[in-house]
Image 1 (cartoon, rainbow over the protein chains, first blue to last red):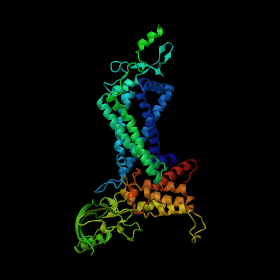
Image 2: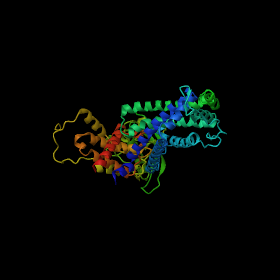
Image 3: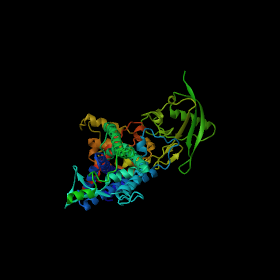
Image 4: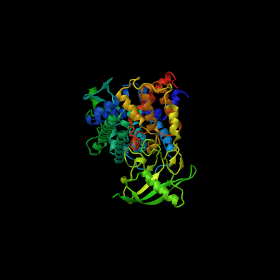
Length: 268
Length: 257
């Protein structure tokens, strides 16, 4: 057998892939959370951030990153499913009293939390990236108005060839989305499950690649729990702040006045 | 005066590999709290034989916790509720009068039940056969100090060598994974200079055999460590993962198998 095939066939090989794809996703959620928190700095800041994400790389580069992240999830999922099937086969019959000796709740529920997270990710991409959830098609002027707002940097509208540069109204999309109670609820539950998933996964990935010992196991378990909570609170505070009325829609995108007024001032 | 207790036992009875098997309940009276768990089962078997029934079959040998033969899950825990204790070293003082005790064999696909509480653990032997050795000369023993080994490494290898191969790790694991067993053997041999020469070959071969025998994968939850009567730590699984990964990388560029 080729050495790569034997690596992919072995339980340890698949777990190393699980750990490495997990590491990418662990870092991604931190970046995603920090990005999202910019909504508290104002509509102009979060909109400019979204504009940067879409324009810092050419479209092909943006798609390369998107496909890389989706591929990472696919690897994580494939490793999880194939290992779970093997594990089930190895233990067809359990004990009469099947209670764990010491395994944590998070560790025992990785499959359930993972599957619910997968469902959430599909919904989340359909909701905020593809924007195709019925009654929440944010690319439609009749659903969210205006869809595009001027790009504002450091308090000034960014101009190009005598017209303001327009960008997608991310601030209003987030606020509008989280004003729907069940969207917020699903989002908070999913990020809570992410915290649970990370409380085991963050520490476990070090074990799978062989970078852990008894001392660091205790430390990493604590770091994992803290990391999980930070991620949970960082994400969940946005729907909570929206429902509490702290975050508001801004149809001017932080510019203070509508596009028509800006263009008019310019031509005077 | 020694205390005695009356117990209700629920014991897994299975005639052979093909039998479906079922729990059978027995009442046992006047068991001394000073008797060991296996002595308690001996008393049960004597009573069964006197009544003209088949005694309960279970594995046992040294009865001093070092041979790794005894293997039974007591109230859902391999080797019973005491930490770092094999079933033979477990005493009835850890149970109380009137208690119901459920006794089952190791549950794992690679460990088929032979009879009652006896399971076939030969897959562990085959893991050892695939790499748990050194291809050294088999002459007379060399001088003890001919090969200097640091205290830390000698201690670590000794801790790994404490594994008695009872299979409690497999029994405790919800995936029936033999990672802790394999890790102990790999850590033991890969740490010492005599075993280092075949480190990569051993790591690859033993993991391949382990997977091939139908054991599940490790989910890093630590149930094996908690059940191990010899306190083999999860650190050794980390070392197995590390040694395996390094061996795979080396094998990619220059085959070691």
